[in-house]
Image (tube, rainbow, N blue to C red; front, side):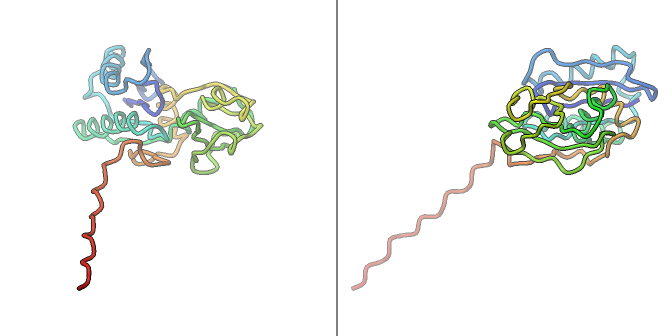
Length: 219
């Protein structure tokens, strides 16, 4: 069984795939509480399916791009579970999972863009072909710089309709489609490492600069 979860957006989402399709899923009802919500949601999904952690054969986790704190919660959890259970951990670009959902649900039928909220009045963005294959690595920039008239999947279009007037659902990653994408090999599998496109907000303070003593005056 494949356990999938994504914490790259404000919403925590978890799903369980039994090899044929998703058999249980859950999404957090409140935002920005990743650390508190992920473990209970995993337990809830396993209970719904009548499964135990020992039944898992693989884990899939969204690697972003996304905020540092949320990504860290998901990736640390995935790597820890993979190590304890001795199962592989597959990283997936969270934008790719959104692209697969858009293609499979018919909200797009040609080339399109996925844009998600990067905060700081910016978006994460990547473009895709009609099959949901990504053309380039994701980028982060202001909506005005990345503006397009093409269909735009993701929360970026909802937040910045002037830059992305052709908004489409879905808005945030869904672990149901993350699980299906991995199980059907519709996405590239990556190392379970965070896809950061800029430095995290919280950084280790640098050591203060040494203050040179005043020059010794001459005689």
